[in-house]
Image (cartoon, rainbow, N blue to C red; front, side, top):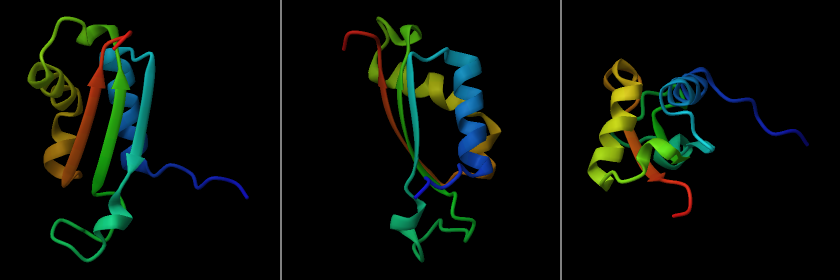
Length: 94
């Protein structure tokens, strides 16, 4: 059985984070099915995500600074298409 293809919002998240932060490792996990029927579920199947990202850009940055860097890279996508985003941001070696 093949894995489902990534939806357009998840693909956009991956593209933007790759361009902005050159991650060594990046996983964009769609958590939307866990929130079906809850507030923020827009019915698209792409409203809730977890991002696991490792980037040298995070070295020496606080957890808050790292989250801000991710949020900045995603910009309008967060305001317009994503209801919830969990971020696990690490620097290499952490």
